Length: 125
Image (spheres, rainbow, N blue to C red):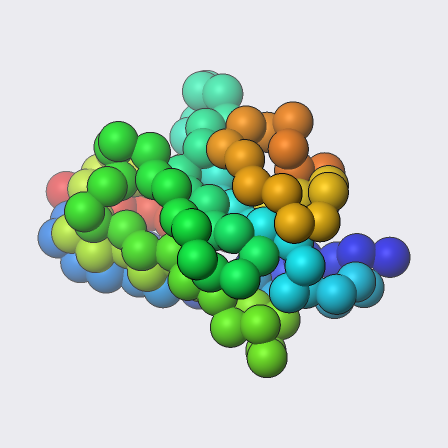
């Protein structure tokens, strides 16, 4: 079965940086787009960033554009989210997600059927 395991969350001061990692197993990683979503306390889960199966296309939420970078290493079955210039409003549980359909690219939750357990990111002011 497909498994996604996130790591790298933690507590950081505003303006700081964190890098999240997500290791995938259970299917051919290089055939599927990957994404990061987040859910702040009391709010709905929202899209953060997505990357196509070969890394050739990326997309970001407006709120993180220019500060966050999504990347992947298909040899390591890993997707990353580099987060710079963090703000208190970035505080959330961050989820890694894998696409349902190979060689497809999308930004909505419906496009992703496989989810990690989440990792907490807390940004203090």
